[in-house]
Image 1 (cartoon, rainbow, N blue to C red):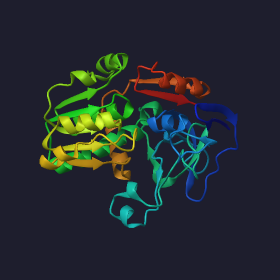
Image 2 (cartoon, helix red, strand yellow):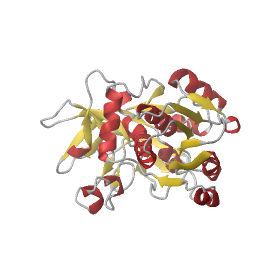
Image 3 (tube, one colour):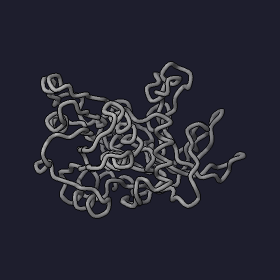
Length: 325
């Protein structure tokens, strides 16, 4: 099969590799659509020791089962494989499973390829009227859905929220906030071209970092995770509010711990999503609660190296490039 292989910092090659082989209880999926994630970009830049070269990246995928009794069925893929039996899994916090694996991280190769093998429980059927490129957005949007759900559970509801970062994670968080009942949502994005795109194509209220409306947000979701965005989140959340933190851009710095303590601000670090969050997000995509989701850009897998370089250089207005093998 053809696969886009990460070969080292800023190195990607389209190669012929052995076909993915399903194990016990797994299905072989022919990939139709797979998104480029921020974590793929971290790996591409050599910033993720969990993803050593050579490796097939990519984990935001949808495709069609190939072979077996379910041959031809359309699926979106939950890339997080868990044990199902540990304390976290039994408590419905399977994203915290100590045995968790994710495709695009050893020992599981990713979905920037023609084929990938996935367990039965990681597949969600996609209705015939939903494009698989749209179904592939279940993974990045589920991250924001999970953060929104946890943040709202602390507050018991919210009327005003701010999202930091206009990539797919931030856009998914903003759409999830609105779908879960938050009426006033703004998104912060430094790139002016991206801001214009978010306003026009995504229907979001996008602002520059230095032009954020007045502080006092019930929820601030940091989809970037740098010291500067954490500092901004610390300053803009209201007393008693919640910071939901998804971004993994930088390991330390930025939080105003004194203000968070004196104002009883809750900080929630959130990792991926539970299996139920993923299913709920997929259902929200299928029934239209997250909007038309027509803000992606589609490119061939053979254009993968160029696509990563374009994202790196800030030449992409869309929050998400979808690659098609």
